Length: 370
Ligand SMILES: Cc1ncc(COP(=O)(O)O)c(C=O)c1O
Image (cartoon, rainbow, N blue to C red; front, top):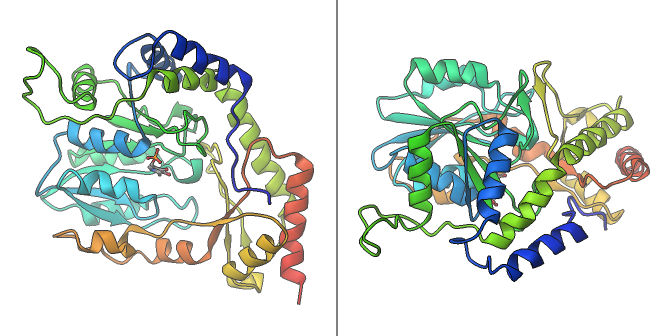
């Protein structure tokens, strides 16, 4: 079976983790590996601070907390996203408000934002879905005018740019994931980046149970969201290769694009002229002219040994959110449709051009088979 994604962990990562363990960097409280990874990642994003945490979910959770968002507040979130985006609001006592997707980039539809803002709205969490950036210049203009905090969900967009500027560097904070299938990985892990010195300090405090002085007396209710030292050591090695990974992912997408060209009803990913997508996953949408439903295509590809995955179930349809007091989603017909018709194909950046061509051939064959 060709998996949708396979992490690439080399001998250098193994050596770095072993060296960190030998230095005693077992937990997340001591040593040099964490600050080194944080400094490297901040430099990569072009921001002043990066705060390493235990997952992308933890990064979003702590970012919402650090922004002072809580009970009675509303947070606009992309409808088509991983549940972690909305849960960052929920676990802070706030209510997520899904914003429907736009049909081209599948990111949140900026034309809908203002209509969803209420006196309770405090923040927007845009998601750079599947590695394609949101138009952050436009979003920041709206957020600035309406005095809303922006927390970018960059879990899928390490290295993606909007008019040449890195995702994660536009909002008050940017949140990254280093889960196994992400652009770079530490196994589990995450990062919050920010240019704001005071926020960075607050994030560091909150991730570490808000330890201050005297030790064991706590003013703030913090979290243990620490990354371990040996994970950071692995992350630093992965970060050195991120340029190559992004280039390989873009090449993979270009090969898929060429091989899948001209198939009626198969919508390939779009890249806006102002955007550099990192194609975290190579995602396609199956329209009626394809002549075969999305689920049947997935079944046929699975029978050929090709693993695929559907798009996200949108936030307006999530049973766990329906039980959140005050949750009143408006209709999200585009995100609903993407959930029914979208899928992503194997996207490991180590796939050869031959393998991609073969997968594309199987997509064509699935359509033509009786
Ligand atoms: C858009 C998005 N946000 C948040 C997360 C959560 O990250 P993690 O799995 O590291 O908690 C993910 C993926 O896993 C994601 O795709």
